[in-house]
Image (cartoon, helix red, strand yellow):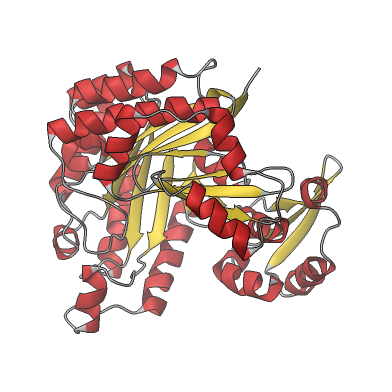
Length: 413
């Protein structure tokens, strides 16, 4: 009997790139996409063998723009992945751009096993969408929402961003209220992040676009309060849902579970008893496709390359390990238990339910005195809370405390 892993699949294709986006993406044509899907399915099959996976706990196909795939390609991708899973996944998500949404696309996704759609709306303002080079317009968003309501084939999640360029407080609130009226199951609400090296960052540095972090965050807080007032539960820093509408795939990340990452630029993490490893695939789509179209990796040989008895911290062994991986289209980062324990706090405290002390102790040993002292201090400021449920002790940041998560983590280091 094998294990069950969450699976992330990266589809890197875009027809254009949004000015704020620093995700890996490339242009696409049908031949490239066909070859890429062949490679993805081969990598997925090898991954099941390497880690003794017999089922995908969840599947999340993101990008890029997965909705650029043809209906035939969508069916081949999802059908191929589902055939590798002994048990049906708890959730199968596909990201879409509003401008790609048609009845036939939704029908094809449903027939292929997709149970959840994640739609990148971002804004209802054409001016703002144009300023960040989004392909969709407000008319596409309204049309997509109408089709989702008409078909009702999937659980629906949507993304919104607070304080896109040219967006006013009034236009943002109006867009969010419009979205609430359509009652999606899940809403991810982000404050605009300006990433180094993006066209948006360059425009801001040149003074062509005005951006203020404080006003952006203030607008996000108003959006948070609007969603909570409309019956959505904030269950994570940026994620809100109606009861039972949490993203099960993302919960696996935040609970620090092992997961597989498939496709060019994707990352996966295997948490072992004594040492863990994070794998990041090359962003060179030609190298990725060329390797995985034609090759399979021997599971025993691969495992011997990753975990062998020498002290993995020494420079000599690191160099040897790099040499052994030289011909493979991914890099490997080794995670010691101290780093993994910090990641337990970093990811777990994103959730409003927080972390469980007993879970920490079973995985890492004694709960840190420094963490206990920090929670005591922050609880006194109304920024943290501790509670007992069914005999387990939970530690969490309050709704206001989540705004200072980075400050808490810095104090924990």
